Length: 402
Image (cartoon, rainbow, N blue to C red; front, side, top):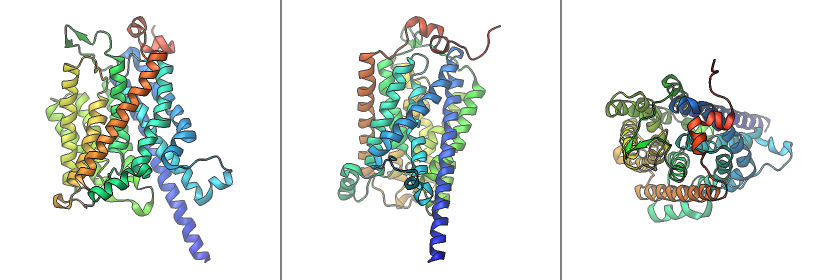
């Protein structure tokens, strides 16, 4: 019995350490979100980009601790510390890991609404999204809430499969962002006589740094979604790698060597492979990532040129929203045994689950941002926007003016 107990304790401790390392890697990804936005926005909005990511994370942690995690999983932390540290505190670090996923939602939104949004109204919206909207869908998919997954399995032989969040995290973030972007409208001067005016990124090295930080952290995001050591899979790691490089190469060709496209290409591929990274053959992952790179380049250019109200600064709707949905569908395609996958997945279940994610995210985003817009307004004044969010909101610029 002593040996059995010791092995059990060691296993619990190892699993706790494993998921803790994953949480730390995903936490580091938020620096990637920050620098990707800092490098993309104009110089007068760099401070605001950094502050938004940090404060959104703080709000996300608090609301997910008190509300979101309970809505999704039915567990809370209003117990004694001795109870919370049972099983080496595994439930606590599981919360930490999943909270870093939840906090990615406002980080995604931040890139879409950059340069013209008010500070506190958007922070309140972030709290409502992370505290209610996101965990509602998260619980449906990852905890089987409300019987949706059971219904899919009865109807189509398999539930909706989203191993690491192509739809649950990324598509939800992208479609929530779309709602906010449409309500805010385009930045002043972005369109002239019906044609888009290019706003050049302020710092390509920062943009590239953000992309690299996100890419490295993504291997914690995907591989450690197993949540226990016995579930870890080298297939997830290699599939993530192949999807990443697929996104890079296709975005390089279709994006005509543009550094913005090239550095978002790996992110598009990684977004898309999250759902089926534990099922696909590496060749399927490569194709999935390549298609995601094409989706991002073409859809970003089309949306910016054709829809004036859809002024999506970092392209988060095509990158996370649409590539995330593609990832949900790709799991149902390349996860099939006939295409070298492990099987156990239904394309129809993937379609229905992905559509459900779109609807909940977009409608939830419209409700949250629409109500706040009606009560307090979401957008900076024209003068504040002209001066830049750094001076208008934070009273300081990114660099000293001598």
